[in-house]
Image: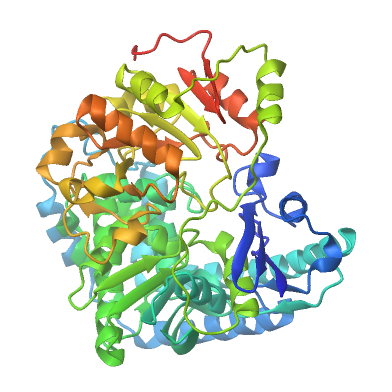
Length: 612
């Protein structure tokens, strides 16, 4: 059975073509329109999927979409908001005054510069009038209750309008493409649960989904067994760890739907204990295995904290609270089910540090995080579920599921910009030598990766010998980051570079969690090691991507290091490159020293390799 899976249209619209549980093609619309997190009907992605699979629209037998009809979603939203109002009426958090005063006494004195901040104790100061409003609207119960009611009501009205809008867009788009297969809608968290479990290869696993909102829920707990998932519990919206983290991301000056990863990086510079008790005081933890968050849609509480305390300490407290709450849930349900493996999906599980803490929970013998864990991966999950023939299969080997290109297309893109190229006889060794000599190399080859991580086929590669690379390479690419670049490491060398891999090696092939680095890694690739001593690696096996693996192997012969910096091949706030034309433009705009485009290599006409 051939199933077309379409992700939610509100952001990161994505199309997936699946046959009998096997993914034929999957890609986000953003890669074709070049607009990051493109919303709307993914027409270009669907057309690309059909072309890649050599199919026409009549071959599609079912279309699946991970939301219910708008009216049913609206009813679930209203019920969730009403339940949350009842919870707020009975939950009484401790008085904030004494907690905040004690927190201020715990703020440490800092002098070490933090890249991206004006001062290490930078606060989000907004002027006395705004800060007074944040205090009353976020931290004074009488006012904050009214503000929360209003914000919750506004969110509910907006959500229903969007469901109606995207429902029309979906139906009109299918007609426009001549796709007449039945459209089947599903509640949202089934799609996350399905992609996490069915792709994991585990016979039996605890299935945890955590996101912002989906069909009345903010997450779920299930048990995957024998190729099927049974729902055990749902976390009612708005008690959402996704919304919880979105609030602090916004309050610290970043876009909630795009920059949550910056908070993870920023948190490592702070002291979580400054504000941890303050943040956790608004979490009802009295019912084990459940999640209740007080006034979770009121952004003014976190804005009050951000104006009053150093940004790094606010980020650290929210990050640690996220880890504490998520691990408590996993511990409870592991004990309840007796499961030994955990699979994760949903936007919250893009938090690689939280994933590391879950991996470290006592009793977890194996972990898998779906590589496209956000809503962009929902269509794939539902399409796998709809076409699954039963039983348990091996885990997915890779996610090189996007479009490929021919040698002639690569040459056309280079010639269009007047670039001359060469075709090295031993390209992996050639590239390794360039990187060892200090060149920044972009690689665009083979099928594009699916999901948010560049995994070698649309990557920028560089040596990690000097920590300063994080500053000058980010500047060259037009980026501002608090995290170091992530490394790619030879599978064979993984134990030399990282501690605590057992049960997480396969997940690390997709860059979905962090690990503590060994002294060897810190010495040989310091640019990939964060201030907290961790890194988010991609482990690469020869059989998964032979040429990419060969570049690493040749580099190790030259340098003694089995790791390189691997960052996504894109300019700041642009999607990862898709086509040869995208690659050539980003190569020239980003002042990248060399471009490996398929089997061809071209040097940048205006850079001086090795210069920062």
